[in-house]
Length: 201
Image (tube, rainbow, N blue to C red; front, side, top):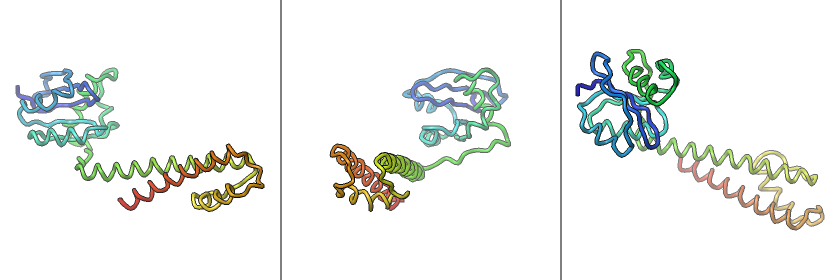
């Protein structure tokens, strides 16, 4: 089989692949299971393989390069104009196959395992920061309902919350105090996660 270019529409379990020869004639447009990917591409001569730069794309790019294929990743928005019919997996794979062979296409650099690890650290830190901010806002809102105002900033909560919990003349119910203590501990844990990831980065 004289395959020159292949477009892969990635998925979790079932991938759609579209292959053409040097003249652009379709040789196959079919589905393969995730477990069949390596054996399928191992039996093909080295060719140009295109994929959208989405989840798992960098993993598969590295795997297929080891097999001798030239792999190029593209941002999904640059592939979209090449979809000829209604959007489905087969049409997407065909569009990817066509887009990867365009001379003016802009490609996404393939990331190494180390680069992906650093990006994962950044994403994890961003997630902890988001949850920490939400937790801080929740604490402020709950206290405001009791007429207690804490200035914005994580440090202010860490400073004022112990004082609020120790002040028994502010009229806070015992159950509510326990909840505040629990939320405060959770906030500390989130803040600790953010700081540890910042050190690691």
